[in-house]
Length: 270
Image (tube, rainbow, N blue to C red):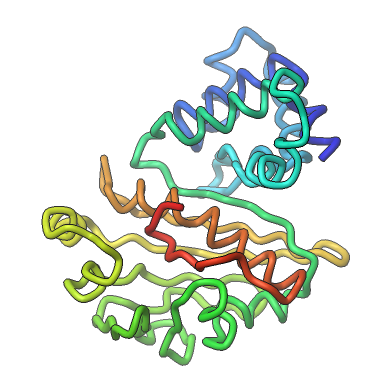
């Protein structure tokens, strides 16, 4: 937590986070253009933010893109913030409020990085084995996890099957990617989704989710990238609200053997 507080103590670094909150997925060149700072200074600030896990980077071809990562803010809010006076954690509260209330561009990928005390093998099991996914997600998958294979979702007693629900990549203990499920009437009814919202979701381009697994000593770095959304995507807004709670429950399960109350799907808000 000390690294997070140190990172947020600097006004320039907070400006960088504000810039990413307004438009996520920027390159170093784009970030420099929005700040009155030398490229080298911006790079140094980004290193501090990445070290604190407040910024996550992914490569798109030869370009390195920077994404604001809300995981440390969520963790501090859940575990510590209620113990202190608001003024002492002013930056954290304001940033969390901005993350919750200021919509990012819906064409952005949802990118979220968390560090879990586990092994790559156990994390892979937690992402693919129905015994695990049912506990923290309330979802099970029917598939052999081979690239090109269909993925049938089971959720709330409903079977969601579609030929376009497929495994895109599967490198055990390193990388997993698959297309997102089809919004069906049965799923919508179970999730409390209105007919109007369901129609909007069914008209959107199918998105995909990718899990990147990287061992780091006795921990594992997990980066979730959910992308391929339409502009102004409703699904993008929904998964952006649902993934943090789901991944928090996954982390809790792997580290303690317990789950958070009432597992949520990645589309649903808290």
